Every structure is written in structure tokens, then in C-alpha cells.
Image 1 (spheres, rainbow, N blue to C red):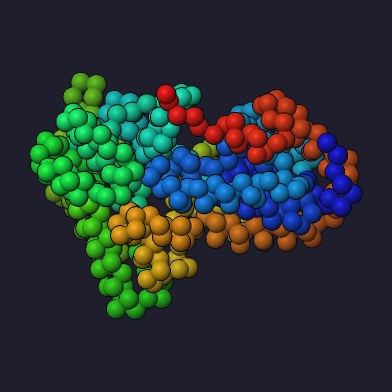
Image 2: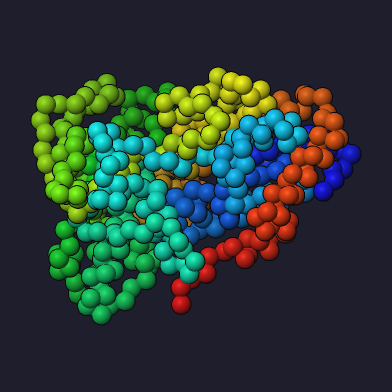
Length: 453
């Protein structure tokens, strides 16, 4: 694999999803040969594994956008390669011949439930959101070999945002479908999510109470009006703030009505209730909100449930060779995501922010975004038709970050051709090692999920 004389630098990008694809395309446009290392067979990241499968339009739109950028001339895709495991991070930065390495590997690790020894109860009734959604999205695939779960009725969900509502919807939809099947009624998941549970049941002369379901409950440490379903601009006056809070309450109430889950606000997890080797519920502490801060109170109460699902956010996975500071990498420069000891490393996207969501933006507010969020939640009359207009915070941030990183690399003296050639030869060797022949479209087609018979 040789580089055209016009190529000025070889750059590695770690992560092929929204931020990684944006950076790769931008750098390729600036005359760089870009190698994109992706840990999965496909590069769609949280779009594929974090958005529940009923977000059909939004997922397809993002798939197309990512693939278009990774298919550009000058971009070399390397799937099934986890940096820090399959490729040493230090060697990649120092020995492969890359002028720069860009971390765009997102936030894949669930933030730990803030209870002592909580993780000792994983697989014993404590479930984290990320693997739970991955299972839900892929369980119907013939070659799925990941973790398996059960969407249990009576689950307790700890969270307070769009992701926790998605978890609650998943639980309610799956359990409703199971109860309808017991009655000989077959309903498609997408149809049930579109129509909603009460309206679907009414078509069969049923009410939710007839199903005998307990339902699930979200426990949120703040108030309903604090749930980030409609953004409040930093410069908003009191009237604008109250309007946004009212919108939040309205969206939440509509979601609860359509999907029959419950919310217990001002409740923070205090301890897991266990019996033998199983989690059987939560002890929760009442809270209050003062000046935007959550203040724990003295009162506690208990709630039993079939399992506890933690949906309190995502953070980056550690990479051997990169120092951590708390939940995030130990960046010395947060604007560029620089790391001590690696002067040629930059970072973009959720790996810097420590967020795993893709549908949040403080740059946009008003009715357009409110309608898009309503569509994302599946509350609009036209289903999810408008959710593709939801501001993609990761893409917005990555676009700006990619431009700044490209400008920095542009100002560097062109790399020696032998350095660029070495980077491309090592890229080709790793592609061969994972069975990738360089035909991106054919690879994606082969690796697209096949349904169970």
C-alpha cells in the first residue's frame, strides 16, 4: 500500500462512529492518509448498540452518514481491532509512522451505580444499561454471542434522561408483547412502540390492568421538571426556564401514559436489597433540589423489584497505556484532548466529554428541538418521523473539534514519505489479519446482521 506524493501525513483515528468518521473525513480532505481502527465489525458505535431498534429512521440516517465518510478516498478502515488489546497504544503512537493519533472511541462503560460493592451483584439482579441495550438490539440475530438478559416485569430503573426512558420503554414493550402472546395475539414491536400500549390494547378490547403486569419504575434523584428532555439555554430568563420545565413535565407525562411506566422523583439509590445471592430491590434516600444541587435527606424507603437496571450515564473505557483521572482520561489540554507523554495525540467526541448520548445539544433550543425530542420519544402523531432532526451533539462537537485538529496537523511539516509508507503497510497488515480486503461496502454487507430463522 503506497501513498500518493500529495499525502502530507498519516493519521490514526481510534473509533469509527460519529466523531471518528467526522474526523477521518475532515483529515482526508486535508490530504492525510487516515487509518480508522474500529473495535466492532461495523463502525456505527452507539448508533447501533445504544439506540433501541425502534429508532429505525435515525439509525439508518446515521449509518449512511458514517459510511459515506469512511468510504472516502484516503480513509482506510480497520475493523475488529481494539486499541490497547489487539494493538498496543504506545506502539501505535510512536512506532507505526503516524504523525498524529486521534482518540474518538466514545463512552462505552457504564458509570458505576453509587452504592458500595454494587458491582459484586452484576449478573445477580443488577444490570447495567449498555450491555442490556446491546442484547435487546442484537438478540434476534443468528450470530449473536454476547450477554443475554431477560426484560423482567417489576424492574427498578435508576436514571433520569432519554436513555433511562428508553430502558423503561423496552421493559414495558417486551412484557406487553409477552402477555399478548399468552392470549394468542401477535403484535410487532415497532407497531406497538408506534401506537403505544393503551391504544394497542384497546383495539383488542383490553386495558393495561387486564395484563396483570406490575410495570417498571424509574427512580430519579431530581424532579420531573429537571429531567433533560428540553434544553435550557445558559442565558435563558425565568420565563424561558419555566417554559422549558413545563415542556419537560409534559413530555415525561406523555411518555408515561403511552408506555405505562412510572416515575419516582427525588429518590437516590442508597443500598441494594439482597436475599441470598440475589438483588431483590433498592433502599432509596429522599432528596431535595436547591439552587440546582441535589441535597440528600434523612428519610429512606425501600422498594422491592425483580431486578435493578442502572442507567446513570456512560464513560470511556480505560485503554492500557493511558493514565486515568477519575472516570476520564487524564487530559492535560481539554480543548484538544491532549495526553501527557503523547504529544501527537488528540481526542474528540464523547471520550472527552464522558457522555454516551447522541441527542443532546445546548446550541439548539425552541420548538424545532422540542418537536424532535417528542418524536425521539415516540410521542408524535407521525411516530419517529421528525427524530432525524434531533441535534446530534456528538456530530456537532466532532465537526468543530475535527476542524481544529486538522488545522494543527496542517501546520506541521509534511512527514517523510517512508514514515507514511510504514503506517500504510502496518495498516494493510492489520486489515489482512482481521480478514478485511479493503472493500468497505462489501464488508458492511457481509457483516450486516442476519435474522434468526
